[in-house]
Image (cartoon, rainbow, N blue to C red; front, top):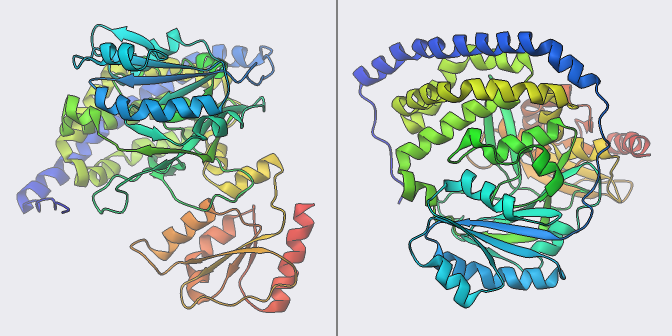
Length: 483
């Protein structure tokens, strides 16, 4: 049963409204500090950009080191490891599995020695939590490809093969699996898919897990989740992987992913690599729900100033912070937001120092990342990839139309009037999730919902009619662009 939040009293709502301008007392000094550090560091950054850069290289081999952090997860490992061993055997020889026993007191080490001697155990005397556990496992790993896997997963037999098969291009940083959630149909269940986007609005980065067809030539992900992803190990080390800035946990995987995109590298989704995530919420058991919310919000703020170097986005972040805090406080409460931002101050100097390295090594601007990493069609266009036949996306609000196309094409139809989302939001998501050469607006509702989107889009051909002659002309334009 879904629980509802209590309705705030008028006095409480008034107090919250009066407190919100105080968040500018955080945002403005932080923004000014970031600007000052950037200005002072600019000569050094410019000199660093002039240094010759070694060419990107693909991993020297395909030997995988699979690192699994675990705290009191004996029962979870008992279910995961048999499935993992099958997947490793399918992928050939030379791979290793490492369980980081993160200060467990449930007999994990003895269980692994007795039941799974093929697993290497990295024993830590105390719980270093997610970031510390991963870093300990990385130090002990020896493969060409690093695979990070949560202990509450079950993997399909082709899990590892499908990840490793993608490596070979020198600019590929990571490949992430498709996540299946056993209780995803329940209203209260957390939904993860492995397909991710990071959307910026009013300076706030919004992290989304999305669905969508898997038939595109290639599918990008904005961030690779740290529980079911394979990384080019050399590139992971070059970026310092899961940074201690984010200890104990949260946002570290999104941060390293964004830094990889900034370097000009890529992250892809491999739908043939399937994991089943039970999502036992270890962090909530360790820290409690309120502290988890504080850590998540603190680290998202740190990630912003660590990675986002576009000052138009940064200015929006500063100016709209009270508004964004107000929106997030509806879910977490205002006190959580205040605690998180105050705690972020202690680590902000380190974030701003690391930020200069991101400025010095960036090959791709933040706005280009938002476009390429979040949009299947834009990503495929950047790689010169097309489908075997034209891909047609039909958007409608009223009844679905019947199209008469003069050439073979693959058609997907999305109803913008269904579900809780607005037609505009459904259209935005449909465009991002579907590879499309041609977008057909079948009725007035679809045309109204996509007016701003169609005017700004340069990746696809648009036609605001289902007339056969208009469709034929549009497909001719698509053919010219596909050559």
